[in-house]
Amino acid sequence: MKILLVNKFHYIKGGSERYYFGLAKLLQSHGHEVIFFAMEDEKNIPCKQASDFVRNIDYNAQHSLPEMITLGIRVIYSREAKEKINRLIARERPDLVHINLFQSQLTGSIIDAAKQFSLPIVYTVHDLKCVCPNYTMLEHGHPCEKCLHGNFLWCIRNNCMKDSRAKSTLAALESAFYRWRRFYEKIDLFLTPSLFFKNKLEEAKITRSPILHMANFLPDSIPCESDGTFKPYFLYFGRLSAEKGLLFLIDCYAMEPRSMPLYIVGTGPLKQRLQEQIRKKGLESQVILLGFREGKDLYSLVRHAKCVILPSQWYENGPYSVMEAMAFGRPVIVSRMGGLPEIVVPGETGFVYEADNPQQLIHDMRVIEAMDTDCFANMSHRIVETAKQRFSGEAYLSRLLTLYESLLSSSKGKPAVGSVQADKKIEKNEKMKKSEKMNAFSC
Image 1 (spheres, rainbow, N blue to C red):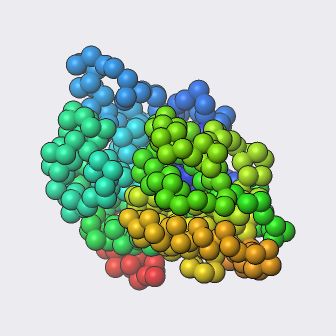
Image 2: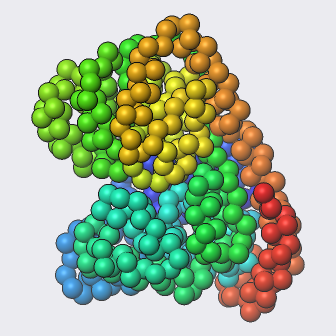
Image 3: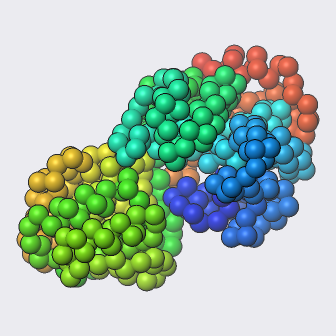
């Protein structure tokens, strides 16, 4: 089988890219061929399809008015992306297209291109862009669902996109265009790492295609193992941004003396404010910013932590940080936001607190601090066994290949791959097979 994997970034930028490259490696290790389509960038990992990638334009840079108009059109529908992926498909003749992050840079034009070739499309939903113009479902730091049912004017009224009326207007127009063109209805199968995201997509009614929950997998490079020991510190690792709840965590740390310090690993726009908050609260010896770490250095910190905390104040999907912590047998404390409560079994693999309740978080930290070595070792081994069962790459790929094969089977009789003209029969064929697909992918 030959799969065309699509993601706007072709370097490790976040969780979606870890999934994108991890899936490619899994598929290739089982004898399948993978080709890529993404955006040009000097940080890109080399691949044979690099010459087919879309030009990279920084939408956050300063541009003249004519440039802004041109960029605005491209954000909504990129003809360059459509033409380039057309050529790639015609040359490589993949069996199926699996898309990840694509809005704004690659745009829904790639969906039109894939359907011109009558290719099945699978979409792994890493964020909430398809139901929220600014993709976070946050309004100035607070969860917001006002746009969920398609009234994107709220994005403009509240300047949700980077506090900019122009960018918010463009984001709202993009979302409205996607609804008008029914791009999401042209996708054959949606995969969501969290059940929470699945429910939000179903509530928004953006598609009649199947939406399946499939928790992310961990790569083979991260072994699920623990020796049951620990060093006495709490750990947060990830992006330093407001929605991650780090200011809330520091406030909780200041409410009473802690017997274990908090290490914060990562970089991001909140770094300076975190430093100021730590100084203001007199926590310099208790809360330590370690900066950006990666590879063995990062995993050593995770492997030896007594507990990992993710105090998010937005709708997390299925973050790798929690999965990696569990792979190393670390208990996790998470907020009841998005898909986080789905990963953690309270008292078994960690604790879940209400995101706006500092006393619950403080109580959970006390429990971890008081846990003796034997109790911790038992919990650690249970967590590792849970991670092996829930985050297996082999199990994920087995189910995914079954879904691929079902899609390919249901698309038999469509125009041969290689035709660059849209066939008028495609839309009728898709409608006739809607009910068949719903039965095949019911979950």
